[in-house]
Image (tube, rainbow, N blue to C red; front, side):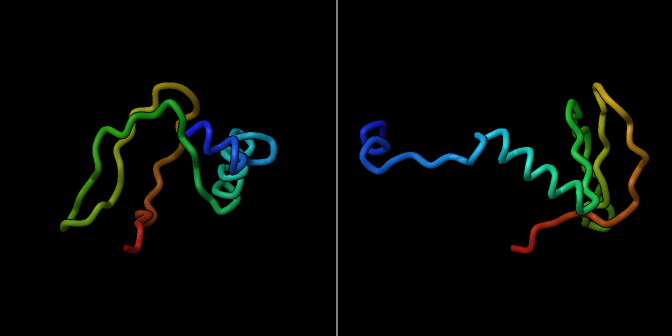
Length: 76
């Protein structure tokens, strides 16, 4: 693997991997998302066979008001 990266070259985000993560977080928050760190997902709330929310335990940091919007889901 190391030889392969030597011959083909390595690619990395400008500014390093943290810059990539920071940019992704900024785009997410600009669109109304909230990133919770130091938070445990205790339970996924399911009603009528569909996920309706997540019960969280916030270990450290600010507590956000409860959100009653839809659930983000992937379209597979």
